[in-house]
Length: 272
Image 1 (cartoon, rainbow, N blue to C red):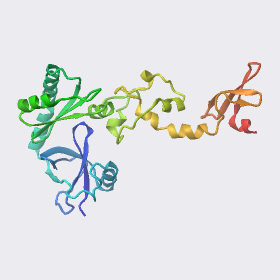
Image 2 (cartoon, rainbow, N blue to C red; image 1 turned 60 degrees about the horizontal axis):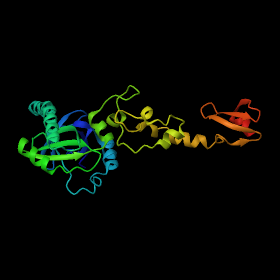
Image 3 (spheres, rainbow, N blue to C red; image 1 turned 60 degrees about the vertical axis):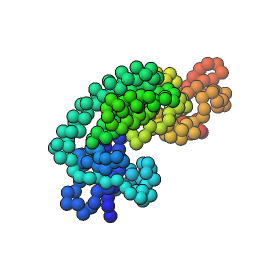
Image 4 (cartoon, helix red, strand yellow; image 1 turned 90 degrees about the vertical axis):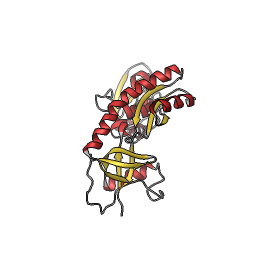
């Protein structure tokens, strides 16, 4: 059986490849490799092996699953020191490329923000990542860039969360962004999640560096939903008292009587 290997590229981009099990050089994590891509070869680092890579490949679904792919791309070979130097030089050059592309975008007066630039290892393709509020007609820009860099140009529009995943950063919690460290994909987040958890509904206070609502609002949402089913809703009348607030962690309920006095009871006492 030919094993599936996960390979990580720049900007936390991950793809899946095959590596013959009979090969004399077994792969290890964090080993740089040269892989087969649509038009040429690219440089990446092994990020998952064995069963973990198999499960992640199936969950990805980008190619319809390993069994559905008629001709899975392969890892060509282990990267040599010269290959690594070429990749490093390209990473350094990409910053200059990004600045040049930004200048050309301004010259063409296009409503788009250039986020990142990524060379394919063999320089047969240059991918420009950008964000925009609306659809952008960049055909003239592509021709301009193709003439400038003498290679195939691909402009790829991404969302704010995808931009954060590529560029990485530190969240308000002081740790690396979830979307760039371990979270497979950024799911949509609505204010209803914050409301259910009793958090501030001010988007500024519950948004991440990308400007979108925090991905972590999803993590404990199901716990809050299930716990709140055990408590009476705020504003509901219980006997001659009204529920002012509930504390799902200490399992306490604050009640207010008609004369304005308040008392705190446990959930168990309330049910008696």
